Length: 261
Image: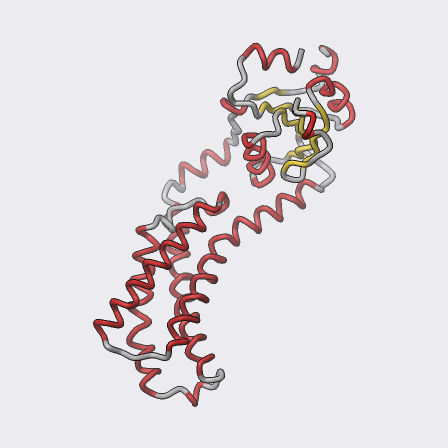
């Protein structure tokens, strides 16, 4: 076992893992408020998408022929769309939809999008009650549905693009590190996702070790679970592993030593 361990450059534990990149740290120091720029860009796209959604809804109501739209509806759209956009952006801000790190988007962010759009529709009814501007029913329904879909898709695009990019990177031929993960639980899944989607690391997650026999032969985040701790030596050689990372945050020091004993 000692001979095999010489092939492994580093062994890290999830609870204390640190991934350092001098250039990345300096860049973060120089761009501490970069998220504000990103938030502003997303606000602009939100405004465009909301305007497009309600305009599309109005066009669809009149068979996509602008000349068929009655002038009162054109005027109504011009008056309403500004307040709609402003209220929507304020509600999105209240729900922290400009503060999220969207490359880690999850069901939680989707839930907040649903809540934000539900509240936005309440605000729309209030604006309607104040202005008394009548619009076709399809304008409200289709506009809201399309607006929700487009603004949500905008936020999850980065998540999916990074995920697809990470999958292709894992299929590349050359890496700085070939990694084995110990632990196929939720911590392992989170760690693998972060490693695959990282733009600062050039590594391949090759395999996972877990003592649960029911997990052997299965996959976690696309990575094979190849066996228990007794197969570590064999799989280090098989996959040419250069780095082992623990994904068992609650394991005792004794247990961690036993795993590589």
